[in-house]
Image (tube, rainbow, N blue to C red):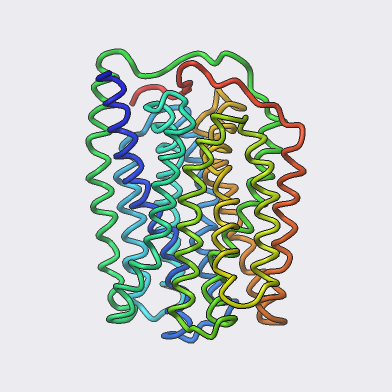
Length: 394
């Protein structure tokens, strides 16, 4: 019982820390309407800001994952959290577009360093539990959901010059990491580092197909994150308030989906749950694009839940497909594939500038269908009895 209690406490702290970090992923999209209003950025310009947050992150996450496969680096959790916060905090200080891109990129690197190691640590302390990993993912979704409200509360009152106040969640998140690090150190000193030999070899082919499905999911989610606030303001004539509400619904729907995914995976297998959630997503995105009026908010919620039901499931699937490279699997499924959506978002912005935002969002309907097709026939790997990690103690 004490062991379970300690594991639950560590997952709770990791989930809260994850929320503090993912505030800064959500903050990028949340700042977009304010960059448009205060600096007159066009669609292509704000797409560049999203790109800056994603580009270095997309390259760095697998590298950090490979690094943590060679050697556990739990100290990355507080340090990377601080980097994520400082970058966003400074993004509104200068009116220079180049400096804005630089600071947002710094935040992206911090987020990149955090996720592979946090996924490894969460899997270690959760002992392979789908529900526990769902709660860990929920923390990130709550951070996303809080971002538009936090940014609005800070920036709407005093403009972009107030962004240094957005460093506060990073300070809180860094402090929350410290008890988890002490727990890991006590386990290491007691000889219970969690290192184990994988029961089976790596299934690279299945991992690649899974990663491609997550890429398609990423494009849809990042595209909606970057533009749903502007789209809602345009369709509902509600201004910034309508956009902030739509973005909050998007992130809160993801929070519900994360917890629901773990529960559904206990009843059915992870591959089946992920496949059918993508079909739900395709229908919801179609409704978001085509159905007028306030029903938009309902379709945003359904699309978000459909995108996030498989989120934590795909992270653990990736780790089980590559049991000898858990950090790399986490870096790719939790990082690289998610960040690729940011690389595509400028194309959505350019198309929106040339046509309309509704036209630019329409192709997003097809991508969840492609994810569904990629997951067809994938095997459901056995969940290891103990957490497998290739990392050596730091």
